Amino acid sequence: MREIIRSDVNEDWGHSGIVEAGEFAFVNYCVGDIGQSIEHQIQGAFDHLEKRLESIGLTLESVVKIDCMFRDIWNIPVLEKVIKERFNGKYPARKSLQTEFAHRGGEDGLQFQLDAIAFKG
Image (cartoon, rainbow, N blue to C red; front, side, top):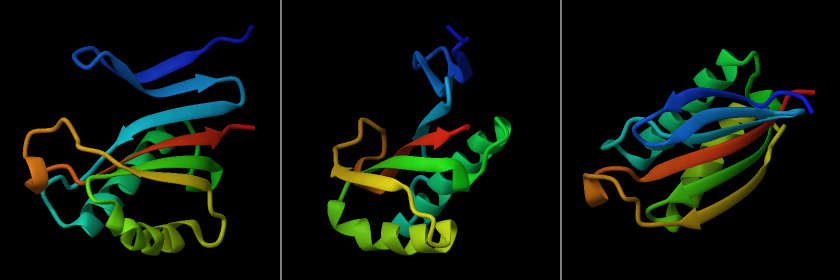
């Protein structure tokens, strides 16, 4: 069995931001620009994802699946706009869902988060 590599570890939260296992990298809890507009938060989450991918030698082109979590699911059209700008027609599979984030700030705080799976092949 090949080694599983965990990085961007947060001991306080008890999670790894990136887990590399076999041909895939699992990237979680990508957020950004908390407290700003939904578009800024979505852009910020993708910026965070890109930085994490770069840290293991990958780009957005390697992303094969994203799970998108919204405080308000009706903001999906904003996500679709951002995805079209960032992925240039090479879109990952995607799931979107609505959740109440356990984050201070409530409605004025975290509005969007994404997790991703990237192919390392």
